[in-house]
Image (cartoon, rainbow, N blue to C red):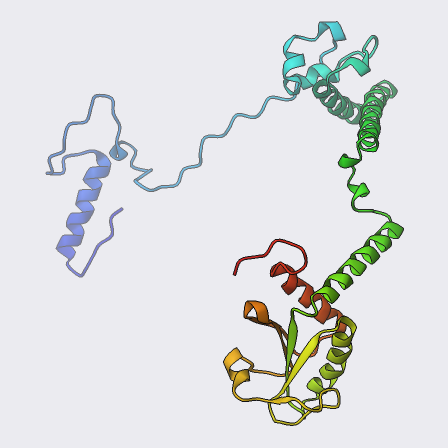
Length: 304
């Protein structure tokens, strides 16, 4: 039904009359193009209107699952060997007498395991459960044979064995870590004459005071040269005669202390190693990463 707009009763009444004529299919005074014979419009279904919601047609209920087909292995249709998943009901009812499970393709065996399991759950008789156990055992035995063959293949060709290069045992991990650490120690010691560290600090900073102790031990361990730079002109016990900041800190971007930079003079290279209080292990790991990136540890040099 149309609504009445405004306060003009004449307009409102005219709207009502027009709607009633439309609903009744009577003349409206408005010419309308001829509809094809047999066609229906919303006027022919006045109770539906243009935008009335209608429930979609009820979907046909799915057919109940077919009962298992009793069949022997020789009675399976050819399609069961090509697309076994489409013959689930056949495999459910497959008689196990005379079935050579070891000869079944894996695709068929996989479908048979699933089908027999469903059959045993739907009808848990001794016969059905026994059939499921038989096919499940064959699947397990086959997977075990595959696992054994995989291991033998790796034993035969050590290149295929990940553990030959990367031990998986706790003891193996310990030995591998020790070898790696010794190698890195030698590499770090071998770069001592090519790299150096800048140490920016202030004498009143508690973190700088602790970092100074750690850095001193670290540098002495690997024979590294440390250039201390004091922002307040006062030294620390480990570095009593630091260089005075002459604008270098501002030029390289030192905005906090303590801060350590790695320098490689022959390459005109200067980059932060880290800021804040760092442990010996932190310094070692970060130095290794930067040196490896620059190709100074026997690896190809990175660009940039």
